[in-house]
Length: 501
Image (cartoon, rainbow, N blue to C red; front, side):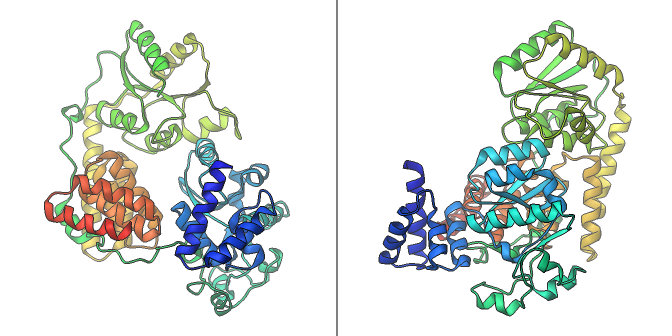
């Protein structure tokens, strides 16, 4: 019982700290829990009615360092469920609350289940943002939601979703009956213990209950100041100058297994190729940006950034989208066939390990023969176009057109998805809207591209704290401390960290 018992004691301590129970009441809950083998402490507290579900979510949020999701206050488009089979959802107790672009927001009974998170990221090629949910509530909602999907319904609607909110979505309150719930006024949910009237949207913070989510933040997004400064990262390496056609075909080999990567490099070099190597996802993106390979041999499972995310970034770019990618994996178990992966992510070929060297060489040769050759002049044109999009975005923001500014920066990223400045400023501007997780994603990418850029780290920490990710905010503040420009700033961050800890 080592690990599980420790987790229960931790949750018990949090419940005591938050004054949800007394020590005697906690002892009683632990005794009751022991009478139901396998039951979680939060489940026991909910079953016996000692602690309100909303308060339990706050405690679980503090335990896991992640927001809690109140499933009674969400509207879930059932098309989301297509990315996770019902048997997988029931086995791991996971439910996709929101699917947006390259992100999946999951309700999970155990958000520490990294294997499930990695599996979903691997198969879908999307980045996963987990929320913690109450075990029994999640199990029930999964059964109901997948049943509704099989019946052809379009939405799961939580029992405490207000009639006003359903109307704002253009949905009839009658739909709530399909989910086995009833539409209640916002006030009734608030009287049941919610900290604010529920006005839930899929993935919005209105349905999220996170300990510390609304805590004071000592620093805000300094968007006006940072836009004026342009906040550029460190100067680019000389290799970023407009490229010429390579004397020898340049192959980037990306694999975190040293033996495989070195073996491939040796074989390719013997065949006359110039070989570049990378062991991690971020290093691979830097190589693409700085050295512009002619073809990429890419392992699907990588530290930091998944191979599918790398494909999405490269193939969605005018500047880099022409580079052929051959993906290799030892862990492909598949909810989709390889042909679907190729059509979805634009890879030229997909091979499972173990592979034959002859197959790799044949695929590299075929990819190079079919690849488009981009001239140095075209590279300069695209760089100027991306820079123009950044300037247009900043001008639109100064003119008061936030929506237009964001659109311009996104246009620039479609041209150069590895631009620090575009990701950085898009994160700052998106931080001015309700899309906090999109802003976090953009600033995370900016930090990936320039890991010691203080303003990017500072604003990312602010956003994590604003979203209720207390532990993640602490981690990023500590990174910002190491990159702080002066002693006064370092002291301010230290004082802020003491408040968080």
